[in-house]
Image (cartoon, rainbow, N blue to C red; front, side, top):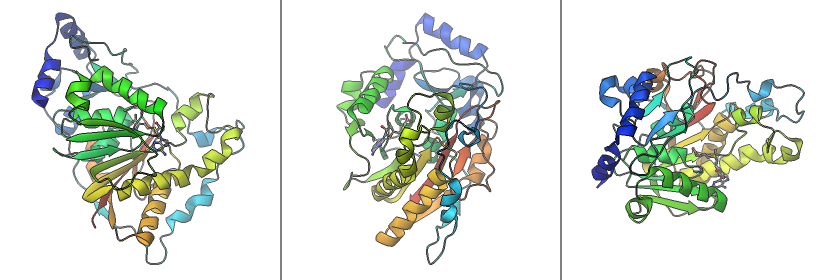
Length: 362
Ligand code: SAM
């Protein structure tokens, strides 16, 4: 049935074919090609696929470098405590050498430094949009999940649905649950899915291949999944340096900001409790903040080490990610203890995206 639905979006009208040819003209790079060393010509057609929008911000300045705008920064140094693994607690870290790239997922980006932007997606003959534009960094947390055919997946903080969308585009999962806390946010998920999934109601929602739920991710219990993605609310560094509206660095949001690592830890603990034995959790943020990244991973694993019999191992993806270096600028592997970071740069302007892969072993 999945094949049929793929075929139905593969039928192109004349106009769509012309449109797709334009993509060839721009010589976009297929990330799929990059990672698989496949034949570029075989993977030219773009159906409802993901696109990577480069250069939404030409000059990215990490939030910590802005001076004088707001004096209420969280002192990161206060949180460096997490670096000390004292007592018996020690997070095991295992090296991983490969990154599985799902065959049905097509991801495209412009060549490094081209400065081109994707035009707005358009509806094709089946009524679904032809591609989904997202920050390039968002692809890696989903690849780190290592989704396999038949997997059940929980996307705990899913709205607007970009990462759920990538997970579904692999065509591997039996079920993806896209959860978010509020009605307005889950409405956004429905809207995005409606734009990209042919016959969403009948083919995807009624068959329970996609479920959209509205829950506080910290309070879900008694559900178990093969894969859990927890893409938490964070200081959203790119947004924070560009927009004043609702900026988390405003002094009125100081308390909320100070409490973020605690809040994120609660969400990660909840995610770790709902993964099956052998299953994988990926924790991600779009922040460069050490405490919101490795700090939260440390705090969550420490809490479960103290309060449960569950055991986890952190997967070191440094080797596996080497094959993505032509597309992503990754932070020096020695800076981060547990996860990896896609760094924004003027040539490959994605991220920031932090992601950490954790496997439950007991
Ligand atoms: N993963 C999304 C994507 O790729 O499109 C982006 C997620 S955004 C960084 C974080 C989301 O977490 C927001 O939509 C927010 O509404 C949601 N959120 C905040 N608190 C939550 C909670 N307690 N439980 C579940 N979701 C929550």
